[in-house]
Length: 277
Image 1: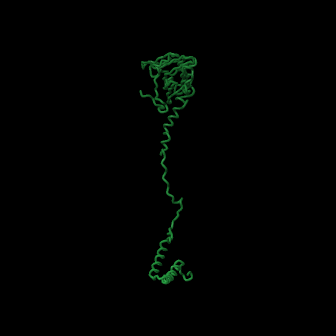
Image 2 (image 1 turned 120 degrees about the vertical axis):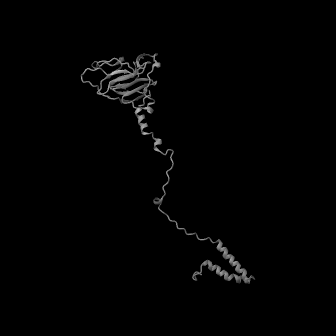
Image 3 (image 1 turned 60 degrees about the horizontal axis):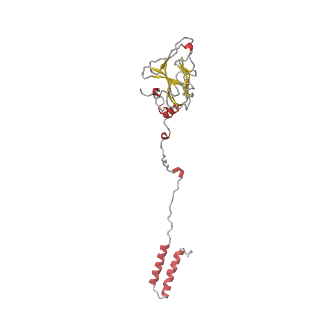
């Protein structure tokens, strides 16, 4: 069959179509019955034969060249500014945390050999002025104790202040040396400052030093202690025009006459911000 060009399957049914009628005839069946049987056989073959798989042409394209960009996955915080604090806030906190710094004119004293009256020392914004001394005597403007003094000298443009501030137990809270200041935690709990003003708070958050520089004077309020529990406070009195000197002791803190802050706190949020008067 193959040589005759007849497919094998078709050849089988062709031979069957030839032989079956005669077989059925011999058996007493007619040609019609044989033809129907052959037709059913052929139809059954067609139904049970699996169709050839359809040929599908799939065009494979390079993945990298034509890959669609994936959308960026959403994040908990879509902006870096949500994670980072603004630059001005970071700078404010950094400056507020400084343990030392310089007021205007920090440096060596100025001495041209001429006799001058030392810069005025004013008690806060009152009209009270501490004793004025000739610059040649080099005496402190205020010396409550041998190891606690308040000295003012001439600078080239601004007055220069030097002092040491202690608490009632003798711990050093802050020092100023010719306008260079330094604070000492934990005895200094807070402070605030500008280039011409400094305020220091002790561990009880009470103002123990308040200083403001002007070109011809120094405005100051503060309290000084020795290591034996004796102290003195200079501050504004109930009369805004008058200053006062208050003696302090272990049992006499005079908290009813505390120095009022001139800055806002906490300093990390209000660095260089004055209290509105």
